[in-house]
View (cartoon, rainbow, N blue to C red):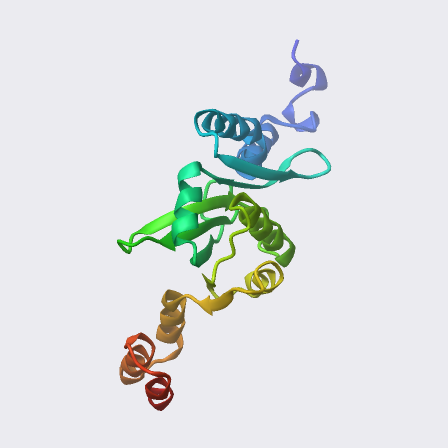
Length: 211
């Protein structure tokens, strides 16, 4: 005899099949990051076995669950040593299956191709987390400091860069500037004027006059 039959029906069990399905669905949607922890680390260890210069760093919480993880390979290290003067520090907002920010460290080579210096999945977009991530990134790159860092207008990113990379010039990404301008400047004439001001090669005096 089942527990349902012993209790006298589903209504008096207290935890029905629907509750069970709801619980399983909730777990599938809210905890894939933690459940994939061992798989992710096994994959990272496999990459490290093939690449002696591969680096992976991560943090855990008090319950030994994965919180933040950063990785880069040996090829990325060489690229950064050659082309790391300008660093794009970009975060996408929870668009992956784990519902967590994905951070990419990106540069440009001598062919103007985008190259990846490193990547990370982080728990949140706070100054503390970004500070840990930037320090981890620099440590993995033998503390080579970029000359300029491009980001969006995220305040936590800006503060973390000031703390970890005080010598680097922080600039806003032109793509985000253009997107904000398109949102707030309703005049096509003003948008064209802004584009000429920002994108054309010119002296400081020419920029000031156009601005």
